[in-house]
Image (cartoon, rainbow, N blue to C red):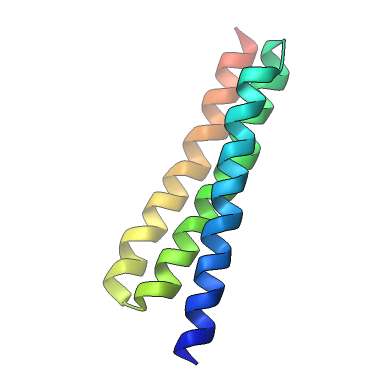
Length: 89
């Protein structure tokens, strides 16, 4: 069972890293501000969530989950909000 969870954690880290890379490429490649904001927030937040889930699965500890949950919640609150504020300017 531990080996299966470790493989799932590795897959989640890889998918999360690819999503973060796609976000970075989107910020560099897109021309206007709204599309750059979309590229900076949507895949990056999902990528971070997947990486945090992989960390929680890999370490299998309640203190780690207690640390990861606020990180995800703060990221969910700040990234879309900051993109919205920048988009309105």
